[in-house]
Amino acid sequence: MKKVKVNYEWLVPTSRDFPAEWHEENGCYMCRCSQCGYIFYGRKRRVVCRDCMFENMEQMLKDNERKEILLKATYDILKKCEASSYVLNVFEQTALWDNAECDGYCLMDEIEEELGLDV
Image (cartoon, rainbow, N blue to C red; front, top):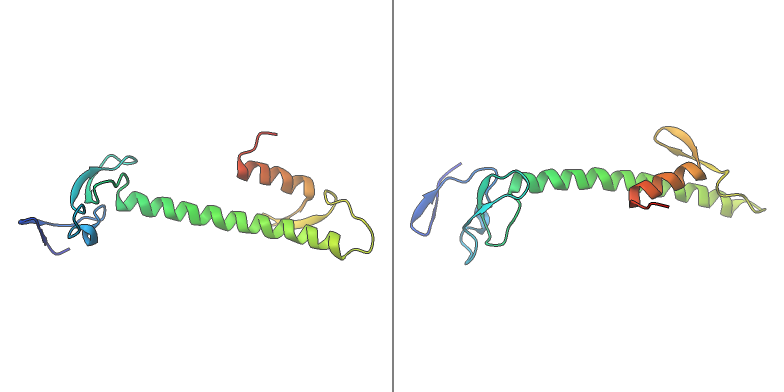
């Protein structure tokens, strides 16, 4: 990476730094990451370095994908119940979840786990 002149000093940005913020008023403070402990340069109130921020974002995307699949499986069961001409037990209906047929009880347990509910 090329050197950037900030406050009369030449800094070489690392993957943990936020060089786009360095020219802002509070953008070139030395901070310590609360997750990995490394020092990085960024806004005055930043608590997580750029590397850890992207790791957290990747995990959030994976979690969101799993939640979307869970919602779709639940929706499929509800659509089966709605399309039926008679009343169906939602817990006896099945949908595809984790490459297996899963009934309403299984989905309810998965939802409880995703939401962190202790029922």
